Length: 173
Image (tube, rainbow, N blue to C red; front, top):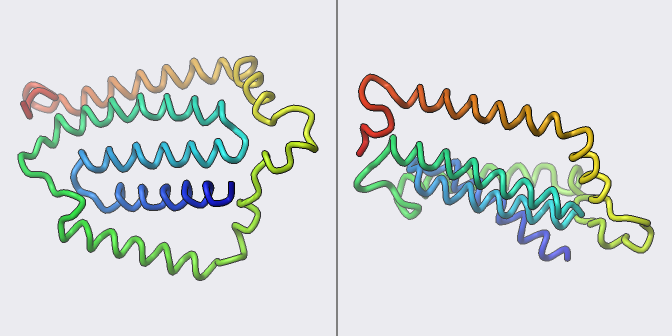
């Protein structure tokens, strides 16, 4: 299980580097999908499979909307790919910074992250995820509705910002 968690964490870091170093929205959205998948894998490995599923579905739904708007606004005929020189230079700089930061803090602050709750399952009466599901649907329902309203408001704001002076998101078509 430790190897799987290590793969998820390394994939999460590489996905973040792809998002941070890529100027094209097409490949940036691909990096965000990888980051969301790896982050949900980390959550699932640490004992929250339901939360991982909910976050994955909500995040990918939001990413679909953001990708559609960014692709409509930045419709380039020849976008920069992941193998372009400027993207590789940026990615190398980000990876160098990450490696130097990890070398600086090695063994001090993330030593306990490798223990997963499934390894101590024989000491638990119920899974830690079950209480969170009940809490989310009982007292967290108001927050879910409020979050949905905020996302709807954000959608209208993005539509108004993208409208611009001419036909809005259709101007790139």
